[in-house]
Image (cartoon, rainbow, N blue to C red; front, side, top):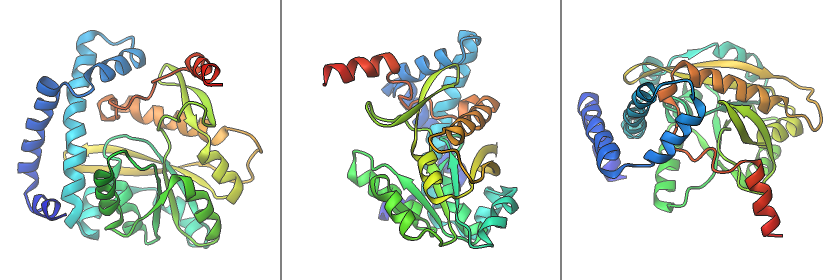
Length: 290
């Protein structure tokens, strides 16, 4: 953490200049997931020319490094910094529930800077922000991100035990944040939805949690307004009662997320192997492993 604290002292202009150097190296020297990014963009935007997709690709690498740099810089942020750099739009819609001691679920995707809202929403709104997370393979990096996210008052809920912890404190007013656009593993419960021009698997978890605890669900649309500045808009997704066995929450989330991505394509996490398999490949793997 000493290195994080040291880096966070550096001015934004220097960190962004450093980020552009890192993005150049990632693209031209390391070639970090370049084939994955190109395939994802090609499948999502078949109507764009090669030159147009190339512009999105190059811009993505800059955005990608900025997210990491901004996450470190935020180590020293205070409430006034968040209010200046991540203003909240339509927070009143969620506060109407929270002020009545009603917890809410907040769904989001890997758009713009997905870390800063996780750090800042709770501080700005005045209610605790808890987030579901799936531990990454590198334990040191995993702990680093947990430390950064919880430093500003957030609480980490490991995915495997999250529902149990949510039910245990069912009536405690708070925000349950879920990054709901990750790829489910083969064999896991999922919904298949037409998303970004292709059949895409989504976790059923957000739908199931909402149905069990009867929390209203919101979507947070994070948009970059300028370098180092974003806005987060809270959009109502659905309120209980929910249809048993339905997938309307996940379907609506996918529609809202796609709208956000198409507004600024380079701000999505294209390096994620989001379409690693389709329904046919999943069935083939499951048959082989029977």
